[in-house]
Amino acid sequence: MRNGKRRDTLTILSELLDNMKEPKRLTHLLYASNLSYAQLSKYLKMVTEMGLAQEKKKPFHSYFITNDGKFFVEMVNKRQEKTSLIIPLNQIK
Image (cartoon, rainbow, N blue to C red):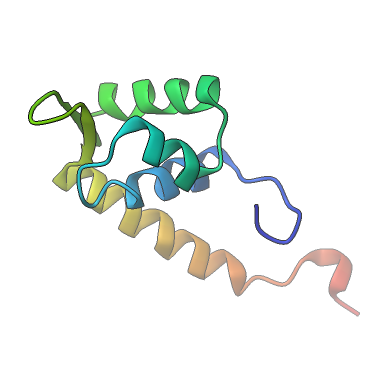
């Protein structure tokens, strides 16, 4: 996790999809995403049902990002760039 803060769902989905630029096995995604098996299973189901990623069975069982998934990652990254420019109200003097 970054800076001890919890990740929101969009960030988790974006990071998970970003790890799928090349087909990845479940174990590799598990370690790269820093999620438990139950959490990873839930998010993988979510991204495959939304058409952001696809499951591939040959030559090995893996997951990879679709074009819609790449677009989703771009939009989440733009959102994060924009929100980082906003000053929290408690920091305004």
